Image (cartoon, rainbow, N blue to C red; front, top):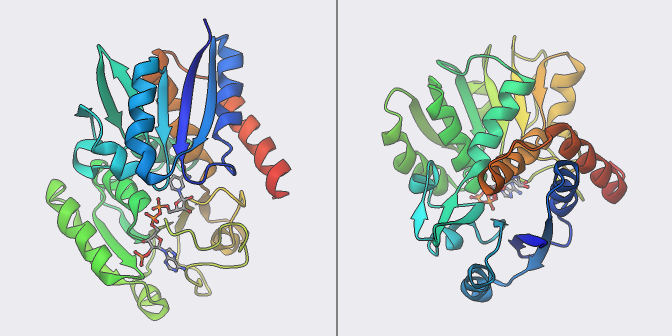
Length: 287
Ligand code: NAP
């Protein structure tokens, strides 16, 4: 019998997740199909209840449902217990479980593409939304030395630091407003800078959350969560001067791969998922 896994979001029509997941299921020979449903926030509880009644194989939730879905589950696991935001749901012995695979997705992407020690690192995190919380957790779990959270709204950055930093007392965390001059003052050699804002995303690929100084700091590592376009303007200069850079595609693929592991207990073909996603993004956005 063919079963279904779902993506619940609002909107979801632009999502490449169905292409990425279905490519993996085909390669794995699973009787599983991944479908996207546009669910308005007021219908989320009914939609999740419906999936449970249908005996769904698993589900992902995306913007704007990650926090609301966390309130609907019977059990939060891993980082989701603190982040109170989930992107993955599944049933275990009749119990609805919620996890956040973005954290693992970012770390696997880092290990694959950068592969350097995060312990003791100095990190500037641009943005303080849901994705920033996941990356903060990932960095803290690897013993980052210092995290400066810079956000348009200072209040949101301060809340993130206040809420999450007590879990990682060895990481010195600070909040600041996202400001170009301040960014330049804080930037130094061996810094890791992670953009978690949507600034630079299609249809505004000419935008960047900050401008880089010249020359760039030595051994700078620049990461963006944006995968559409595949390489954002934020990464252009560091890439051109041969610094280590990481776009958002790896995180997207690995958070999906982790969800499939949770649903099936099997290892999905990450390369097949990556290729299907890149092809879909190129076709959709000519990026
Ligand atoms: P979110 O919760 O809405 O947070 C967005 C953050 O960006 C907030 O801190 C917001 O600041 C800031 N921001 C928004 N517009 C801005 C602007 N014009 N200038 C400066 N700052 C701005 O969204 P999210 O879930 O964290 O997602 C953020 C990005 O990460 C999106 O591009 C998303 O596609 C990407 N993402 C990628 C992956 C992946 O797998 N690669 C996974 C998750 C998310 P304020 O607090 O001041 O509003």
